[in-house]
Length: 216
Image (cartoon, rainbow, N blue to C red; front, side, top):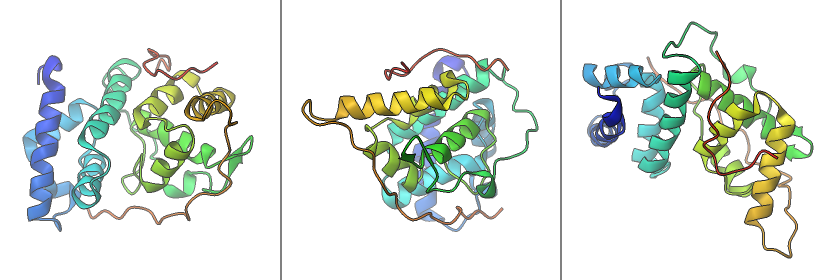
């Protein structure tokens, strides 16, 4: 597919996939997509199982929105095409047991270590098929910590190069910007109970700073 038109093809795929899900919700993720759709997904560094999670969530819950799904995919595609030079590799997948517990915190921010690890795995294309970046827990965290867009958080994870202190600064900056001028940002003390893993059947590390959030 023409690189200038990949987003149009992606949105068409998403629209058709949501309609298909409503007709055949029990179809396994592996068998769900048409060959041409699988080809498009591979070209942007996605797997059918990975895309199916977003199709399912939008079809069932109406969230994430189609535009958010596109922007998340765009962040992964940019990393895939630049840092990974269009080659996924055979890195070991990051499974649920490899993630920090949901109640782990970094500098008093609960869940931050977990979502950082998920974002890094999402960028590298190594997030296990049973996991989803920007699931319900991720949405709660990003909404309550500055209303950070999930695609922006991916770019922040990319440009932070594993420096968690930079991520803390970015989150605190977002919280400050999202709070009334006379109100200091508050760290959310708890987060929703950990959900079970999603069930399915079947480098240059540098890059452009595409987020409006500041790291320092």
